[in-house]
Image 1 (tube, rainbow, N blue to C red):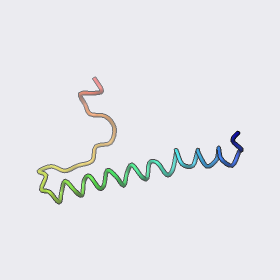
Image 2: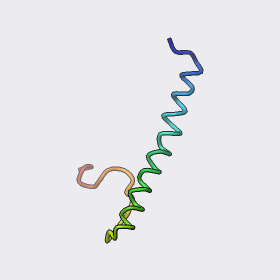
Image 3: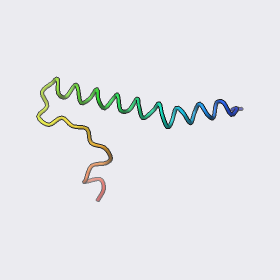
Image 4: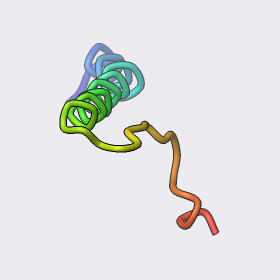
Length: 53
């Protein structure tokens, strides 16, 4: 089974490493949009207004 060290490693991965990877991916999308000439490139945190109704 899993030991305490694997559990700690999993928690670190979920709460620290995964958000950093997602942020880097979003910055890559923003950079690509600016490079390709998008009119209004931006990063939105959270859900869209239509989804929160």
